[in-house]
View 1 (cartoon, rainbow, N blue to C red):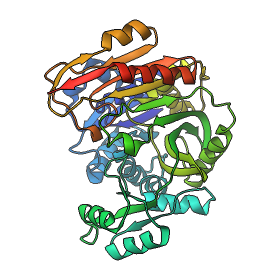
View 2: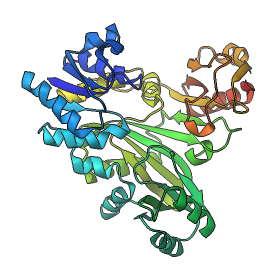
View 3: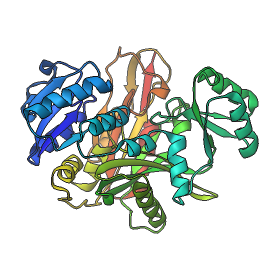
Length: 406
């Protein structure tokens, strides 16, 4: 099978998808924005060919590049795994008549109001929402639904650009910042109270082949706005426990309703006083290295499983579910430059055999703002055979390690 893979070099984990395709026997051509010399010997060794384009979201340039590859031989698949690439690549896929995620599916997984409309029609429980382009429509929605509300870009990933508003004045400020009424458009959503997590899958022909459940502590919006919190993402190994059946069933319904075929998916959910509620889905793997946690928690290579699904149409391994695994973001105490750390040696003495890896930028490194995400500054990844044990370990790390900036 000949697979074109979009942007094989950046972000850094992209090379793992190329490596996995090569490992399962695919012939891989890359399309990316960097010159071929920037790929490095190892990555170039996994590629059968490479095309450089100005931008991988420039659909005309991408169509030209794909057709150059097609003139050299048959292309079976055109694949990408980055959120911003999903819809443009689907349009290129359609223009070049290559099988894979459709434009309709890519659009529904990108545009949040359209996504929720489609899923409500399929009976999936979700927050009330609307796409608005003028202030009057936003105020009508607020009056109908009531505060608090969530204002977010129609097609953002994670909590980027997302704010909670509690009254008309805050709503007006958020709308003005998004240029609503001046050509801008946002998604407005009912605020859902509850615990937040995500359900990730590798689906083959619309059926879940591998599935994983992770939890946020605390929720993303709070985590991305509050400096003193060391937020956690924790992968559970208790998928057979009561309470997850409803989530797994909802996930399969979402995948079928949106027409997702053979693809990774990343679905956010809430569970609270009004039960389980769908939040949003991406037709791609999660970010911030979460697939590396799944690999470590399950003693298998999920990147290879993805490649096996693309190339051979079936899974090849079973996840062990032997471990719970997690990542903890460690924030500098202020903006500036890293001065130093305390408590790091202590947590290695306590938990060295539980620590998977860590990142501590050297002193002098400029800090990144809290809202830059879970891997923006220092972080650690761990695993433990028990979910509660993993959480306790991570809590202890958050109370022990300090990141000092000045």
